[in-house]
Image (cartoon, one colour):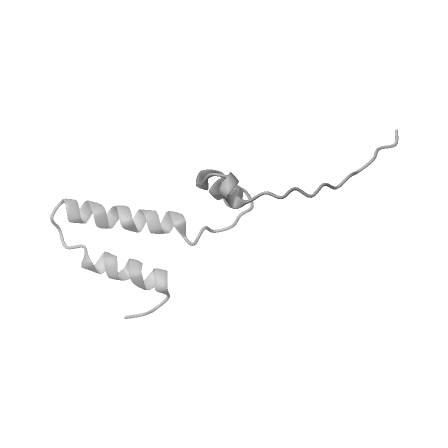
Length: 72
């Protein structure tokens, strides 16, 4: 049975999609979203330490260095 393939161009802006949809699409394609998971874990650890009144400066320094790609 013969078939026809067509191509259509659609003008779509990223503002037409919410952030979660875009992140899901990136993840489904195997892209690392700037270490998103690692960043959230580090931020959660810093938050918990701060909330408990414990020192968190070392974890904060590590997170900053990782994000900027620098070594102290």
